[in-house]
Amino acid sequence: MTTTAELTYTDLPALMRRLAGDEKHNAAAESTVDVIWVLYDSVLDIGPHNLDDPGRDRFLLSKGHGPMAFYAVLAAKGLLPAGDLDGWGTFESRLGGHPDRTLVPGAEISSGSLGHGLPIGLGLVLGWRATGRTGPRAVVLVGDAELDEGSNNEAIEYAGRLGLEQLTVVVVDNSSSTYGWPGGIERRFTLEGWTGRTVDGRDHDALRVAFTEPHPGRPLVVVASVEKKGA
Amino acid sequence: MTTATTLGMRDTFTTTVTELLDEDPRLAVVLAEISADRLTEAAARHPDRVINVGIREQLLVSVAGGLALSGMRPIAHTFSAFLVERPFEQVKLDFAHQDVGGILVGSGGSYDISFGGRTHMSPGDVALMDSLPGWTIQVPGHPAEAAALLRADAARDDAVYLRLSEQSNARPYATDGAMTVLKRGREGVVLVVGALADNALAATEQLDVTVLYTPTVRPLDVRTLRSAVFTANTDVLLVEPYLRGTSTHAVAEALVDIPHRIAALGVDRGHELRGYGEPADHERAHGLDAASIAARARRFFHAGAPDGPVLRAG
Image 1 (cartoon, rainbow over the protein chains, first blue to last red):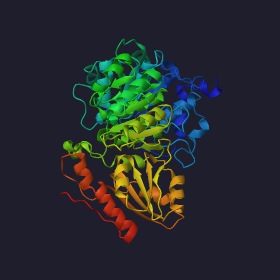
Image 2: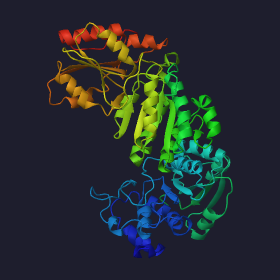
Image 3: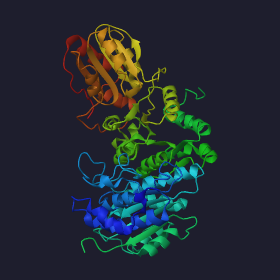
């Protein structure tokens, strides 16, 4: 364990302040900070100790915009040198407005265009299934407005039919989708065979329980509700 | 080769991939209904490695990318129009951009599915794939070439677009990435790709030209091309069974230090051919039958006349 791995949640604001610059996506970044922290701190087994282990858990940041919280958590957990946070977005920096997995240690996918992370995560889980790897889980973070992209629906339908227990989607819901989801986001998934849980996206204990309670034979969606974008 | 060469390329693909799945546990095939009926035996033996996602082509491509991220070697397959053009952003972002490889096997060629009309034709697929860095592009001209290419591709790790067609030359040629010299001459060079080799040979029977053949479009075998223009006139006639001029820039770059002329034959760029019929009808309409190629070759090599569109239908 490196010393940076001992940083805590209370260190995140300071780390995020080092990511000066793009103000436009600050609200989006903050909407994800609690979810990403809980996942890395107490749900997923990902760290400097197993980054090259093919059997590690994976966090896939599908909603690649507003990645400041993600970068900050990677730094807090010792996956990314904290010094990288300074000067992000410059031509010389490895960190930009959307993460590139070939540049950012700990980034499992390159994202930015919406609607790619969940279908990719589904393929990852199918690969584990084909090779008998029953241990790891993949958690894909999407935004509520990202669900506008039809590619997500292709994956929601198919993962539900197959009952892929190793796949989890966390929808950070800041009510930013223009046309909304009558009946609720969770229902879009449960109708297709997923287990659904909707919790306060700021409540660490509630998030932890939602992510870790069993959901045998079904993929899991956790809808993490946060304050409305711009509120 | 255990694959019978009397099969077309698509059947050769399903037969070969069935064999490969038995041999290599790293391989997985992803389908979107198309050809699933031809892989039932493989699916019964390897239910977790023959993955049919239904009619969901974005998912088809992204699942293949995810499989690659898990360490597997994915083979994603459907008709080229639905594999490359419909989910092009998935192709762009979910393989090479993620620093993983995979094999996309498109079938239906440019106008194989002529009865299906424009929706089932994809003459622009190679040009689209050529816009992406890091992809190997293969256009076999014979089922045996398709089988050999697939076997070699399966053993590698890179990103490959293997583009199948039911059109075929009478015999297969080498698939090792090098061009095959079909004949040697002095008045210029014809470079032909895929299943148009027989037409190009028939078209140049009376011409004293070198004819080069390749099923590997990217990377192009620059060495053999340069060696050919050094021993013949430096006029190059490019004959491709997809969008006209798709490889003009690659040939121009290969010959950048040599004064040369290039003319290109292929599927017409300036006009959407609204017609059904047989693939041979489309071949003629685009000037890719032997007689049309011969006429164009004579004009180009003898008169040096610039080439314009020759579309006759519509």
